Length: 316
Image (tube, rainbow, N blue to C red; front, side, top):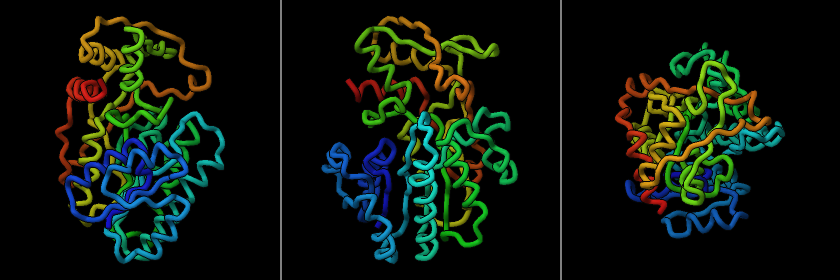
């Protein structure tokens, strides 16, 4: 069996869909199924649903039958300030899964985040464990991911194969239940469809012009491909890996691509960055990809304009 936690979420549901096409193994989908929309998302897929509250017992009982756990479930709200929520859902729950996978010799791939890099003052290098200790995330969400990464790196007893994937700015089909945390591509598609215009945050950093803030945007199709490639490799090379394209693009590039894909004349304006995130706002992110290449993971990524075109056409 293959387990996917967070299976009703954005990346999780795309991964379950991809695994259904790529493998005949049984898939166990784990999430908070008190939320009916998550049940609805997975109902038409070939998988067994296990509620998050029952999963640890299920994992202990069925450990010998499970080939790999993709632990993608997490609290991902970067504006949440309650540290105890992140300790419970992101840190302690992940530790419990790690320990059971270690005991039952189950391979583990889990979701870390590019949020661990904070302002990027130490760069975006995933190939130096000593450097990882220095990272300074900008919010409790990033702290929770950093805390677990460091905890994992310090373990003497580990799953037989483990990978922490530092997802950069993922976009693509299936974001509709992420709300404010959905990608700028998602918000742009809906805003432009409704108003024929799009607002971007002004720059409050003298080194960047309005709209020239940059991110490493990666299609969810590339993300699930990387997840599958790590599973198919099967052993060795445990550690942390960036999941980004290695090519930062501006928000203006992104929005222009959305206007073009929707065949609507460009109409871009700028608004102040909200006060509650202004001092924690990242102006630049760009993954290094040499570690992925080193272990044979494909780094021929979908171009931003093409990825947005496909996304728009699937959303219309």
